Length: 215
Image (cartoon, rainbow, N blue to C red):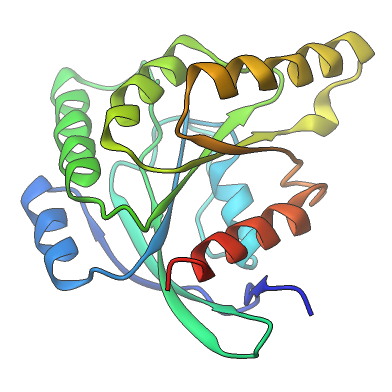
């Protein structure tokens, strides 16, 4: 039997942090491996969380930059031996949003710096990008921001169902080799649609397998 995330009702909200010192204390008290989900505002991160872990796990919004806190959940993964392991899900504030104050942007930078400096190397980062607008400047800045921290990254191109032209699909897939070469931290690239759940079972299996290998 394949490893699977126990998505339906498995994820339980624990708490939310918006202060760097609080996230540092959290990691000191909770060293278990986890999954950190990050992406530009409005790329469908919340929709993907709900597709993987069940409806209403994360709140969705059409207003970019709404999430300004690190929302932490617990969830479980069941292996082939039926043993259940607990992990943490970190829903990170979106990056690349323009309509925020300088103080909010500064707080985001301080919060993310504390998060990635204290993140243990057993936590996987899942970066979500809009398949229609891949590798934006803010995405590249994010990779430069976290790559030196030596974390493993899975990249998910979301909204592939919105790509109507064959040349758009070909151009996106041609990016794979470039990304693997440029960003050594990227271990897997997936093409998905959170709305239609296209590619989500494969992504779910990949995440579960990775996390189980860390315990």
